[in-house]
Image 1 (cartoon, one colour):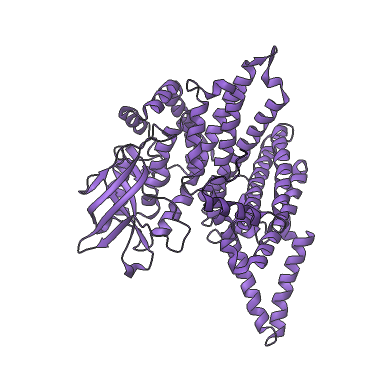
Image 2 (spheres, rainbow, N blue to C red):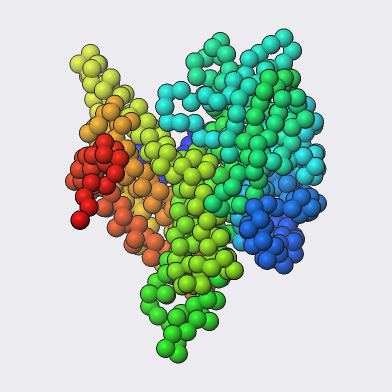
Length: 580
C-alpha cells in the first residue's frame, strides 16, 4: 500500500510510476453518509429552490438580506465541516463538496458565502486550532451566530511570500496587528477572521504568522461593500487593522509558519470551489437543454441541429469529468492522504475552466435572450468568471503544478549527477544507479515494464486505459526533457512549464474518469454504463491530441516571437498597426 504521508499520484506519475491504489476504486460514501447527504441536499432544495427571483433581485441590489443569511445558519449550512462535538455536521470533503454542488445549482453568491466561511474562513481553526480555540469559537461558527472570513490570498510568485500589507509585532501579553486586507469575502458580515501578517525577523526573513481576529476587537474596521462584476450579492470588503491587540492565545499554528497554514487551507478547501463549479455546470446543462428543446427555427427545435448537439455534448463531458476529479480529490483527503496539493490545484483549474466554457456555450444556445438580465445566463457568466482568479489564479496554479512535479525529477537528476562524480571511486555502486536510471528511461520510451500499466480494468475501457499509459510515458519524457533543456533556469521558462502542467492536468482528469467509469461498470454493468463509457472515449481522444500537441511544442514553438510581440506592445503601450 502507498505511504499516505508521502505518496502523491501526480508526483509519482511524473516519475513514470502509476500509483493505481490511490485512484482505484473510485471513492464512494458509505450508506450512512449517503443518507445524511440526501437529507442535506433535500433541505437545500427546499430552502433555495423557490428563490430564483430573489437571487436575481439580490444580484441587482448587490446585497443578500440579513434574515436570509440567518436562515442559512438555521439550516446548518455554516456547520457543514465542523465536527459534531462542536455542534456541526462533521462532513468529510466529498460530502461537503457535494453539498456546495447543490447550493451552486441555485446561486453562486450563496455558495461563495457558505464556502468562504467553511473552505477558507474557519478551516485554519479546524486544521491548526488548539482544543481551547475550537471550544471557544466552533459552536458559534457552526450555528451561524459567528461567520468567518479569511485574509487569504495566494502569495505572489517571488522569493518573499509574506504579506506586505499587514504586520504583527509581539508585545508583552499580545500581538499588535496593523494593516489593510483587500477583497475579503464575507468581510461585511463576518465576526471571525483568519489574518495572515508579517512577523518579526527572529521568525525568519519573509515569514508570516496566522492569527484569529474577531470583529469586536478594538481597531478592527470594515470598509464599504465592493461593487463587483459578479457574485454581487455576496459581501466583499476591505478589513482595516489599526493597532489591534490580539491575545497571544489567538495565534493559529506556530509563529513564522503561516505559509504552511495558508497552503493547507487552500489545498484542503478547494473541493468546495470545485463542487460549486460542478453544480453550476449541472444547472447550465438543465437550462441549455430546455432552451434548445423550446426554441425553434424553421419549425424545428434547435436541439435537432448538430452544432447545438456538439455544444451540449461537450458540456456533458466537461461536467462529468470535472465531477470525477473533484470527487477524487475529496476522496484522497477523506482517506487520509497528505500529499494532494498538486491534485487539488488541478481540480480547481480544470473545474473552473469547464464551468466558464459551459456558461459561455449555454448563453450562446440561448441567443439574444441569454444576454438579457431577466434570465440567469448572463449572471452565471459574471459569477463564474472569478473562479479562475481567486484561491490562486489558474496561471499561478499551472506553474505550481508543473514546478512541484519537476522538483521531484530534478532531485533524481541531482542524485544521478552526484553519482557520476563518484562513479570512478565506487564503480560497482555507481553502475547500479546508472543502470536503474537507464532501465527507467528505456521503460518510459518503450512502454515495457509493469510500473507503467493499469491493472484489472474492464475490457470495455481498455483502449482508454492504454491511452493513459502511453501518454504517461510522454509526461515522464517531457519532464525529463524540459529539465535537461533548461536546467536551473526552468523557473523563468513559463511557456515550457505551462505545457507540462497541461499534460499533467489531462492525465489526472483521464485517470479520475477511468476510475469513475470502472466503478459504474462494476456497480451497474457495461450496458447501463454505456453513455459514461462514451464520455470517457470522447475525453480520452481529445486529451491525447492535446497532450501530443503540448509535447511537440516543447521544442517546436513560437514562444520567442510571442514574447517579442508582447515586449514591443509593452514599450508602445498600444497596438501599433492601424490600417488607416
